[in-house]
Image (cartoon, rainbow, N blue to C red; front, side, top):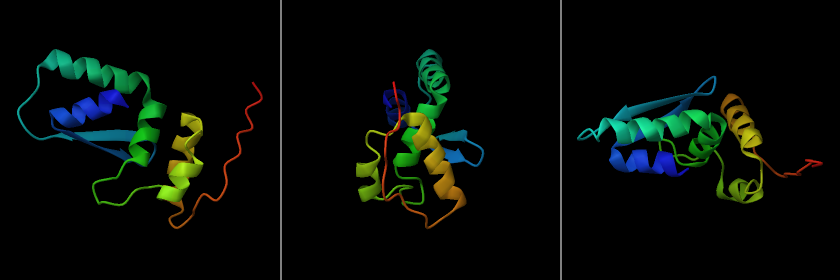
Length: 106
């Protein structure tokens, strides 16, 4: 997500907490308030996508939620499903994705 990457460049760090809450911290020189407001509004308007994106990227402890082989399997997974899978893996550590089948009938 471009908004999250831009905020990271400005000095923000992100994490996803239980219950699908996105938390952040700021380190550095504050950016112009309007710039941050616009970027945070975009993150908030696409919360499910933001949670999925943050779940795929490496958390602060240095371990990705999804292994590289899982990321490859999930590359076409809808963002809402990806967010649910990320939460599932947090609740059931050690679980892994071995197959993804898109059943969307649209």
